[in-house]
Picture (cartoon, one colour):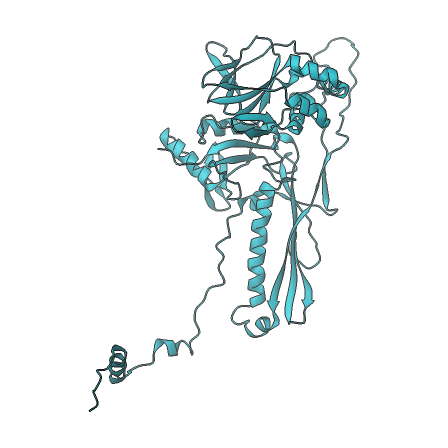
Length: 475
């Protein structure tokens, strides 16, 4: 006798569905006959790109832009780097060429011998490193920490005249004679590690390498020539005279080897299958949409290069004497005031959005409200009337620090300018062209998309950077 098995759950569900009569057209079927309302393809990586929008762009028909300047005798300090072996530090020998009187010296053997003579020293917060009026007979390299340079104030106490951070140096001019005196007091603000080179150790090395000693003496003589406050060769005048004195003769000398900026390029090959371009162009042209998104990505890369490129990027082309560290870590109103005071006519401040937020928190702590200005119809936060524009291309380091860039712009104002070339073949936008490359045996259409660009700093004080800006949240 056969045993009747009970129906499964799936079978029961199917029977119930069949019993329910469909009363209207399903949405799945209806969509086959409907035209949906759709957006253009969206791209999350598009940013405001304020840097590209606010830089004045100069056409460079020859592909290169030469910045002619007056001859300058300034050989200002650069930053040095260090090798670390546990708790022991050693300056990278080649980096000693960043010291003022070693600039351009390339004898690796002599530099290596000098590097071995540096002595590592540790200082606690508040401890004096050098005292004003004492004999200046050491070169100091700040390996880690912050140092304040102070002089007596006019009435009482001390005034801070400079701040030094990782990679900075002071006392480099003592290489010439070692007989001068410190004209400031250097005090450690945080726990600080420095490498110090005594003048006696330098003399011992210079006695072994004649080229080293002659190089230092040559740069020392050059630095002693009359200059203006910007370090340029002075133009002599005689003013307020009476009678018939002999007038001085002068001329404005120029740099013999001015900096030239060549246009850089960002390129990609866009590929679109001919079947897609032929059959799926309604209601949106597929090739145009592919091209639009490709151009957006190229513009993002262009702005990133203008900030970070080691050859022409703004972060790398700012003079060392136009860089200052923050006083305490996060960006404060005092820090931005110091940054603005370093140049005339600052037009814009650029900062990572997190750095702008950190500055806002510091203003809130002090009960300060920083206003806003209208920039192209947008309400942009501003400090002292200078807009603070967001730029996500400014990097944040692993230590959660960033930089804030201040700049003056335009050729007429001796500022920062963008460089491009217009009138390119098959130009789509100024400085950007799209060239047809053909169709291959797989029926794929190829387009070469290129954009050409660079940036130039016309005079050193056109741009400055507030460094070591902490963007971590603070309680």
